[in-house]
Length: 272
Ligand code: NAD
Image (cartoon, rainbow, N blue to C red; front, side, top):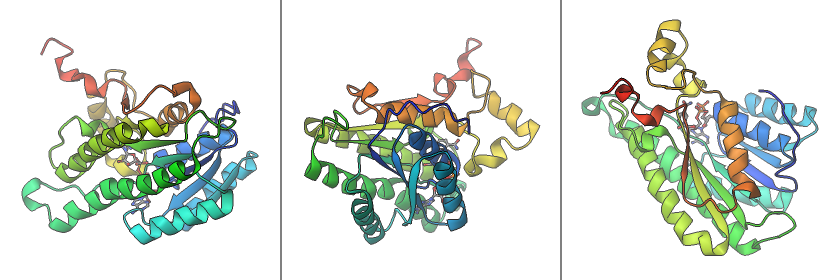
């Protein structure tokens, strides 16, 4: 991760990033801290790595805490939000990032594999967004901090759009995130609460190591990416900072694809 700031576009704001002890979430947390936000690192497994992210932020002069909560468990999510408000007074930014895969052919997929992915990737985003909206509504706009009452960024995927054989549970969860995000964005826009998604393409993180870890796998993956480069968490972090900042004030209910062109049907590049 390259420190580029600080530009302080998020100064005075509190940001919760779920699943922030790994991959994209970690990248977003570091970059938001770099932009002046106080950052809450949510984690559910591997406390050590959450502590490391907090230490890294503090060593660069930032402010962070870590909180354990399974985003698919209502009581744990509510306890996490209460703890954030006790520590920092309020929350300004939610990055609904926690997610996982349980891949299987459709005909062999167990109900447990289906349910786990829906519980974490979709219900988890609902539970966190609901608590965030409740806090944003209670507090309202503080013009000296931000022109919005709060910002929610849902980590979706190119697979909210692109079907994905052997990943029906994952694609269904991200398709669900897309319409949950848009419905919520429509509902809370009059309250000056902004809700958007990021749709990452292929980003090098532990969730998809097998897709890029060998030269042969990376070559096959690049066939799907017109820009001819696999993404890095920093690519997503920069987009998340922009969507959380007042620079994007008039942006509401969109999915910003950050994918090197993966959603451009690259198979048709040579005429189809
Ligand atoms: P990752 O595995 O590195 O990170 C996922 C994080 O979510 C981990 O910290 C994990 O512990 C956490 N998590 C899982 N279940 C949780 C739960 N119940 N409660 C709280 N935290 C939980 O993977 P990543 O690639 O960084 O994925 C982050 C997000 O980006 C996911 O929503 C994923 O679907 C999305 N995404 C990733 C890619 C990619 O190419 N890496 C592409 C599109 C979308």
